[in-house]
Image (cartoon, rainbow, N blue to C red; front, side, top):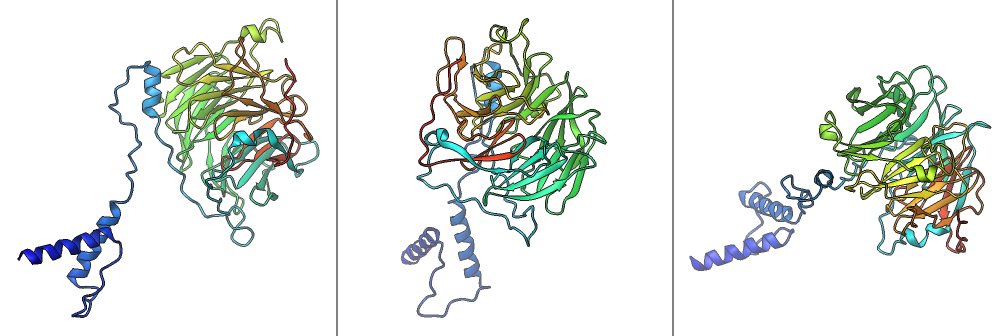
Length: 460
């Protein structure tokens, strides 16, 4: 009996350690597939393989974690969880016969960090597909970085293929106009705001140029539109003094906030916190998406009279154009149409002070269509800020550099060589070293291997 038990244990250990099935005994033929022994072996193999799968909740933040820090910091840290990867969609916006979806190459171990190439970006290709004199008002990349979409004042949507570096398609919205085109979590679907006829947000399929759904509710023009990074929710702000929360699967808004317009809104990388910036009150409010009907748990006050008084008297805060979290959720970027943008520490206990301002020596961009998607943005690593200035040129700021005694962060470098036009819209590719700028044409920037180091931007 002891010998029999030992042989069974050895067979069981061999099954668990190896995913392959045992060879049939030599003294008799293998049992058929429907035998009880074969079913038992398959069950043991499945259990062994399941033990090798990592736990998906290993990095989750527990709700009962003790924290003795500031309440606002505790709420933010408690809410943030790792962002899940969006589901893979194999559908192409161009149909199966014209251009299939392109899979992004996996990141190699010897990938070049952005800090080694940020000063070498140069204009690589320009596209002029909008009507002469019309301006591009928004830019956006899809989750996989394969496509870029631009909304223009000539009531067209321009789609660009970033993998092949070419213009892919032009879509017309002559009846309703278009602004603030944003990809859903599929490269074949976008949402955008109407500019005439009504103020409806439209959900468009790029594959067959047909509308999937209409989101009605705003009574005046929409000036901000952002999609959640983790699910199908999105948020919109309009000049009707409302901020609305939506879901792509429903035509009705499931959340409503009242705030004095103009306002901006964005999600943090976890998709649990969203921020609303109110220019009228010079404040940024942080809400918990699970309790948005309650008061905000943190309110930042943005005041910079000492700096602004050098450009106007009395000091007046310029209009705000962009609100964005860094990918690690630690910093919050407030873009303006003035001489400086503002960076806020989203975990700061002192909410009456911003972290520093990023200064534009040659002044702001001045497009005719002043409401754009913003002329400044974070890089995907959250370290650098890229933005336009003046009539030409692109500036780069390093958030890890120390500001001066007046809390002013000067540009790290200026990418002005070869710039053809104003950069009134700026967007960075989330998966590769590519960013796009636009005014009356869309320009894509790539790092040049042998580009010389640019001269430092002039002082104030």
